Image (cartoon, rainbow, N blue to C red; front, side, top):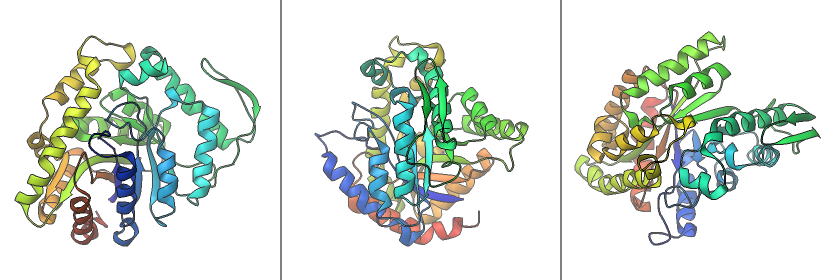
Length: 352
C-alpha cells in the first residue's frame, strides 16, 4: 500500500492567511521524499472556508513539484463543471511537463450547491457537464487534433498544447462520495477511484462495486482505490487524541455547514439522497470517525492496527491520502506526526 499526503484547507482569513497556510503546506512537502510518501494532493473548491483556499490545485502542485523529486502530484480533484475543457487540458499538460511526468489527474462532479449558484451552473447539469468535460479533456490530451460538438462546449480542429509528457496522457481518477453509480461508472471506464471513508461500513460495498465493474469491463488487474484519511501520529495515544480532537470536529462541522443546502430544501436528480448523506455526516464526531477507521489517530502501533482493520473491512485498497494539517492542527504537530509516521509506520506498509 502506498501512502501520500493531501492538503484540504479548511480555514478562513480569521484563522490563518492563505500565505501562511500554503507556506506551511510546502514546508510539509519538504518531508515527502525523505520518508517515501508516494504523492502530494490537493483539491478544487471555492468561496467558503471549506476548501476555498484552493480554487486551482494545479498552482500548488506546480510549486510542490519543485520541492519533491519523487512523489506523484495529484489533483484531488479538478471540477469540469466550472472549467472549459480547452483550458483544463492545456493546464494539465503544462503541469505534467513541470513535474516531469509525475501527474495524476483526479476529476470530480462537485457537490456544494453554493459553488454551482455562484458560477451560474445548474445542479441538474452536474452529471452531463462532468461526463462531457472529462471526455473532451481525455481526447484533447490523447489526440493531436480534436473536433467536439457538446452540449456545453464545442470546438473544431484543435490541437491542445503543450502535449502531455506521459503518453498517451496522465492517469485519471474519479472522486466519488457515496454514489454506487459513480463507483460503477469509474470501474467500467478503467480509471482509479478516489473516495472518503466517512461513510464507514458502506465503503466496502462501494469498493466492491468498483472492483466488479472493473473486472466486467475486462481491464487488467483490479483497479486503483485511493482513500482519504485524517492522520495524527504521536508517541503518546492521549496526546494524539488531544491534538486531533477539536480540529477534526471543526472539520466535520465545516463540511456539513458548506453542504447544508442539501438538508434545507435543495434537491437535484443528479444528487439523489444527498440530504441523507449530509444528515449522516452531521452526526459524525471525532469518536465515530476513529471508531470507523476513517481517522488514523494515535501511536504508530495503534495506527498500524487501524490500517490492518480497515484494509480487512474494505477488502484492501492501493493508496491512502492523508490529511496531516487538517483545520488548525499546528505546523509543529503536523510535522512531528509526518516524521513519526514516516519512521515507524511507512516502512511496515511497503509490502502490504
